[in-house]
Length: 422
Image 1 (tube, rainbow, N blue to C red):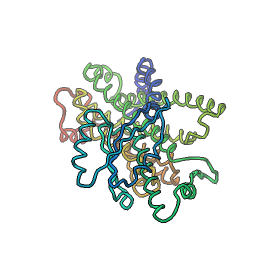
Image 2: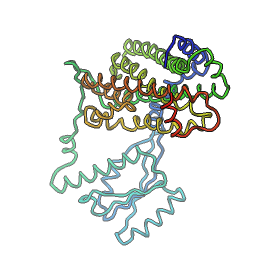
Image 3: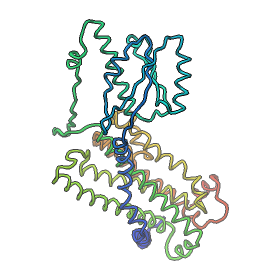
Image 4: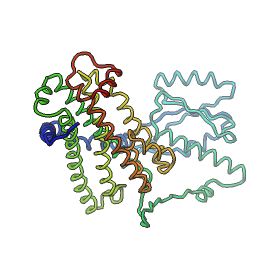
């Protein structure tokens, strides 16, 4: 395939056509906002959700720890009223089934929120059971569990002749502060911030590579259906057209990243000047450079595949069937963050990061968590560049014939014939 400079005109047309749309501006502004909202807002809503009073029946067989348990739950609501209202239900082991049926009926009638069964051997076995209609009040159930822990531990210590109120200060836990060491320098860090930062970055990579890769595919299908491609090919080669579309759409993605980077820079200056969120961000400008690098390489690789798919399809419905395996490769990369983050230099993370379908996201993930050896980064980039060359060459051969084919979608056998003929 011979490449001329006419592809630059196609790239310019594709670029300007997209950046002038209101949807681009809206997506660029709202993209980070929506992504941040999806991560931050659920946690904020969870913390800010007002708590309500809980009416609980406690079936304490053999009166094992009822008094100690209820004394540990003296929480109050914002209005000063007790958060927990208890009702002591005495029952023997043989009466449990009958008591449960009665209490289940009370739950259905909303007379109580739930009931707790404390078996007689809870001190030795450490097991209890809570029954309720609404089990989504995680913070409330955590309080109940902590109160049970304290009551049982107190009983065990009392059995050994020790006072729990004195011992609990002796067994108070230690808060571990974590520091990341990089190039001999220490930096405050923690797993939660590393995970959140990495997750945001890989989601941005995933969404933009998929979004703009599919945009190349749809652009080709649209121009095929409108017969515009026939006019375009009268003045330039099919290879110029394909490369121009890929570069033009890819430049739109880079423009989006540039705008986001400016906002991030301004936000970081504000944070440093006010002390807000100081030290909370777990990335550097080196990370951002790798982010841009792997976006470009990842986009070129996947856009070549999507261009080949678009050239053999006549509608988005047909393309969705063919693009599923390609999309699933991208989906895989956002299913493995925990495995990679926990052991970024392990065999699994290393091997997966060198497979071109997964390299753009997984290798960047490793770089953000724990910088891998330089030879692995260089090797991943080299493999990805070779893969782009191979994918581009195959896509160009398919594009050369398929872009002017209409009607029934070609079979896989026919596509292989095109590759031999082109």
